[in-house]
Every structure is written in C-alpha cells, then in structure tokens.
Length: 521
Image 1 (cartoon, rainbow, N blue to C red):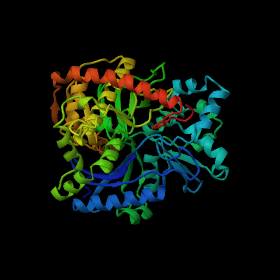
Image 2 (image 1 turned 90 degrees about the horizontal axis):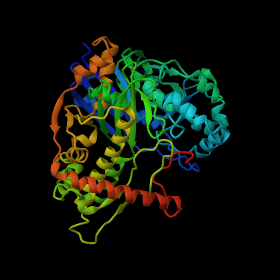
Image 3 (image 1 turned 60 degrees about the vertical axis):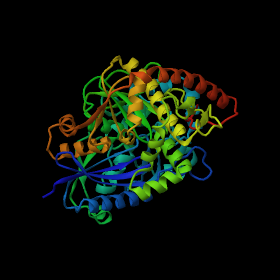
Image 4 (image 1 turned 90 degrees about the vertical axis):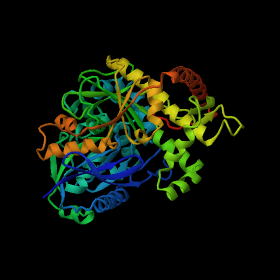
C-alpha cells in the first residue's frame, strides 16, 4: 500500500527530498548543498546545471527513502517546489537547452534596452503580472536571443524549476501559476499566460506550455525516471508551486490578511491579498497564491541564510568541528555564543540586505560597521548575533511596507518557518524587533509540507489545497516578544537606516561593489 508523500525541493542553496506520512508528519529528509556557478565571461550570471542538480536530487531521494526504511513503492504521490524566477528552456524533444537560477543578473543591458525603448513598458507589465523586469523571464530570454542565438533558435518551450522536476519525472512540460507568475509573463487575475504581454515581448505563444493548477496531477513517473531515482514507475506527480507560496500553505496561512515570514536562504515576508491589487510604488511584488482566487504581496530580504552560512564557514571552523564531535549543529553552537551578548550586539551594524525596492533594486557592499578591537565587544558571538538582529530589522522594514500596501495592518501573530525558526535565539529576536508574537510550526520545512498538501490533494485525500493545509499544520510553540528590548531594537533600526543609506552612496560613487544589483539598475 502506498502510504507516503515525497516532496522534491530545488532551493537556492540546496536540493532536498522530504517524505511525509498521510497525516502530514515529516518522517524522512535528505539535503544536498549545491552552488550555482557563473558562466565563463558572463558577469552576473548564475547558471542552473540541470544534470548536476538532477543527480543530487536523485541521490537525496535514495537517502531519504533509506533513512526511513521505505522504498519507491511506498510513495503515493510526488510533488515539487523550488526557488522562484529561475527558468529552464527545452528543445522540441523536451531536452534542456539552458537554465538559470533565481537571482541571475546577467541581463542588465536587456533590461536597460526594454526601458529605453518604452519607458512605460515595465509598469504595464507590472500592472498585469505583479513583476518588474528585475527577475523576470523576458530580459533573460532576450539575453539568450542576443548572445546564444544557436540555443534560442532551438527553444520549443520553457518552464520554472519546480516544473522542470515534474518534466524530469514524467516527460510532461507544464507550468503552475505560483512560480509561473514570478516570470512576469502571466496575468495575476486569470492565473494563466498573458497573451498581451507575450505579444509585447515579441515571443511565440507556442513557447508557453499548458498551465496546471497546484494540487492537480501532471503525469506519472516514467520508466526512465524510476531507474534514475528508485521511485516506482506510474507514481502520480502533482503540480506543486513556488517555495514561498507552498510555504504559506504548509503554515496554514490561507486566509486574507494573514502574515508570515519564511526564514531560509532568502527571507520572505508575505501577506495574503485579494486579486486585482498591485503596489503603485512598485516597491513590492505580487504573486499568485497557491489557493485559487487569491494573491500574495511579498517583500524579500536577500541572502540571509547565505550570509549565515558564509559566517559559519569562514569564522566558525572550530564550532563546526565541535558540532561534529557532539552531534549538534554548528549554528546551535553559534547561538550559544550569541546568547551571551546583550540585545543590540554592542552596536555592530551589519550591511547585507536592504529593504525591498522592486523597481530600483540593489544592495550595498556586504560589511560589518562599528566593530571594535576589543575582543569582548567584537566577538564571534556578537557578530553572529548582529547578523541575526539585522535580518529581523530588515524583515520588520519589509513587513511594514507589505502591510501598508495591502491595507491589512495588524498586531496579530506572525507565522515563522524555515531554517531560521529552528533556532532558540533567532525567533526571539524577530519577536522582539517586531513587537509581535511568533507562531512556530511543528514541521519547520513548511514549503515541503505545502508540497505534501498538494500531493495529498492530487490523489483525492482532500477536496482542496486549503483544506489540506489546514489539516496538516500543527504548532510547536509561540514566542512572545520581550518588551524590554523594544527600545534597543528601535534605535538599532534607525542606526541601520542611516548607515545603509551611506553605504549605498559608496556604491553609487564607485567606491564599493554592490552585493547584488537587479539587471538594469
């Protein structure tokens, strides 16, 4: 009897295979870290190696099954999720020709050309799709057309990366609207491709495959994919979605106005909103939500998880060694050190991600400001705590923008999930900075749990994705804000705002190099 669900997650920093039982309890997990390498001679590029990624995902499937004593025959249905914005191009046989990861920024000249040709074009696209050109598919497709014409001539179809997983498993190339909406060529109101935008882009409508809603069966595992993965041929593959939108399902964030922070490689702050509303300032993005007839307003905090990983790998080699000896996580040991540091981290100001400004999106050079040569002040624990506090401060800035635009200001709980929610200290810092309680779910891999909800819906266990999400989510704890720290963090926010503006001016003057810059800015 098929008793479990498998979710495959192609994230920015890793590929994961996560196994759930029919009640939505996570029982198996395997993660393979990966990096997306630049193409030689292509500044800003971040390629997605489909063959290497598939090999890692196939290995993760075998590991996850082995760890919980299951075989491919035990899997009732499979779904997928991934980083958003990344696209895969295929030839007419369904073979991958070219792919890029989410924050690939090679297409700066193409964005500039689009804006120069028609200054109103980006705003027109935004009003229909909720996306600017910063991470959209059109500038990247134009780059391929101009720089890799031999590839572009062969392009028969495209998909997002979570849909690519389905294509590898079933041979069916489709797109679902949650991640599909992040490519800037979909209509948020119809949850389908926009013929108007595709025509304005000068692209062939035939390139854009059929749209399948989250929770619908796409196809079944092929004999080839079964040999590669150890899964059973004929297992249903169900459309999943973008990591954030499925994460909202896994967190039970399913009603209008509900708010969540997903704390992974990037942090996302989201609020559910009605269809038919976009941000006229173009600072925020709007995407299709996984449940039908609802959108999500969203802000993104860049590279939070990657910054923490960088700090761990560069400064915490001793903690990594101790963690291996003790059977603990190196981040847990870093939090031990950070918890010995007072709120405010002795005034250290990290400069990494900025609050989101979708229409003019770039970041300062990564830096730590206001360090001291006193090792009791600028210690490893203080710097790591400062990183954690800074992530919470930028999340607060973004939440205020999202909620102001959405018109759903609230002092109610914020749902928090992802890797950051596993910490003992980081959720407390977020609660203290925002002044709002946090709800932490039992299953921290909320995105994968949303994928399990999609898989369960696809085989008829639930009537809708929303019903599945409500049934699967369970809460571990609530974190109440410590009001004694509020003034400290309010002052830290003001210092960060001033310091970040000054650091952006250094980028503008060519003194320092932006951590990341959207194409065309």
